[in-house]
Amino acid sequence: MTLDDYLMIGKQIDLGSHTFRADEIKEFAAKYDPQPFHMDEAAAAQSVFGRLCASGWHTCAMWMRYNLQKRQDMEGAGWGGDGEQPVFGPSPGFTNLKWLKPVYVDETITFTRTAKAHRTVASRPGWRVMTLICEAFDSSGDKVLEFESAVLLKAE
Image (cartoon, rainbow, N blue to C red; front, side):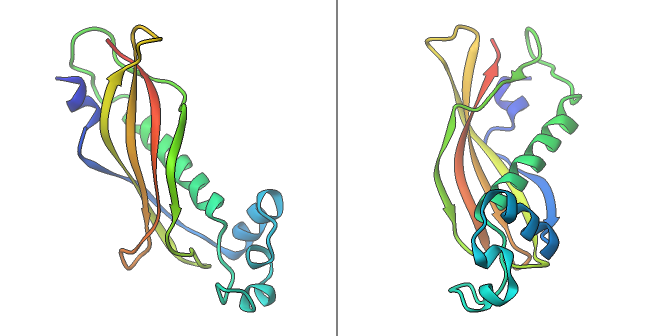
């Protein structure tokens, strides 16, 4: 097995789906993004969105939750390559974050990731950085979120 096979380079992975409920949207907004269109139906009705919708940061946070859950689920999937099994580290950041469409109350969003590539990190021997295309889609298949993320990976 190659590292590319193990990381499933080029393959879109379904991370899972989440339904955004009104109480959850309001609770997240109250803590992290207290804008009226995320917290109050009447205010949201008067906004550009026309109704209550989730914060984009909420959508991103749920992507991360499902991404980590999928990674935990897959950790036992046998590494059959040379050397020790690769170990995921932290993320050095992301780029090109786009909230393409609002996520409204009771919408079910499906989260995906696609590993694009990986390369060595010159300043950290034994470590690589992997780039991911991160996306989320509503039930009609429209993309609501996209960004490119990087993650460090301990691998020979």
